[in-house]
Length: 380
Image (cartoon, rainbow, N blue to C red; front, side, top):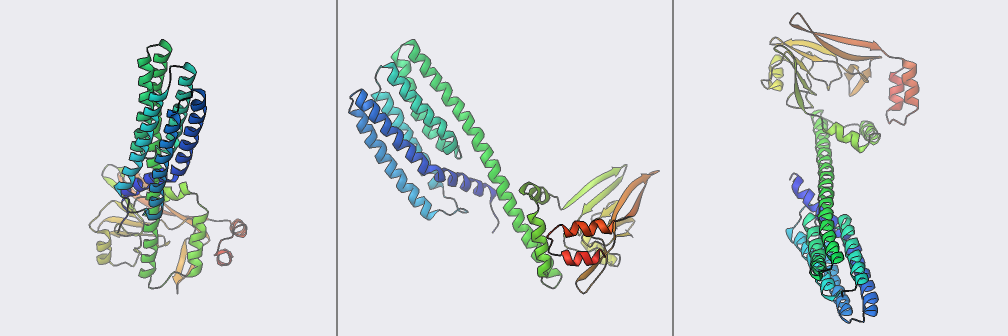
């Protein structure tokens, strides 16, 4: 079964929210305890201790939900219920903070500013802990802030009205920041899923190549591939995996260049000078172009097929002289091809440039390439 990218991104968002849940719960408990301790003692209002008890109860329920999710999560089969529970828990917690603070706060300006500071700080922290899944963030921030903002507006004093307006602006700014954060996280998750998918395709292609060769790839060849991959960064690997299987390039006027690796229908097919016209017709699958250029074999070649030019520019780093018994002989030069238009006619030239063998040997000695000994022998 293939990977559904949208489901993967959704699952990553939910996982991220639940990964942050323990920290969120701890912050809720610590802040509510501090608020109850300070305002319960300062204002001698027992309602703050009831508020603390409700927060602890809510935290306990959310901790149970987190524990169940952590035990039963299935990364590749996300269930909407987990997102719904996260959003519900976040919403109820925000509502408890919003209604609790708005109903218990007095008209004392210091107390009001203290609560506004606490609520604002928790909302700012929610940008980094809840906005992986935007509905969960909004469900917390809106009910946590608006009741206190409404209290400030209803108080009637100019300073309170200003504070209420500032809280509304603050919620809008935090929501915008959360949207950008959520969008960036989703894009990162999409890239990660795409890289995983591409890697799986690459593994399957390598297995197909081994099957077509009628034998398993030699261990040293596999080690060479793994070593080469380890030398590349994630960005470089992502760039390589983004290569298209086939591309058509205009050459001017009515001429076109068709590019592919093995053949237009498969990266692993071999087109050589001795490939029969009938087999080549099957590989091309009806695709025509002024020049059809492929690689894969490491053998430089140009041939005509139904009036089109079929070429292989060879290889810059490893051009083959022959390939006998599963072992290749490397030529001591770099190969490439040029295409130019002269008086409306497309010309192809195969090029060869000699290489500095001493420099090749020195460069090889400075690496830990698994095929190092064999390459040094070839460069001799």
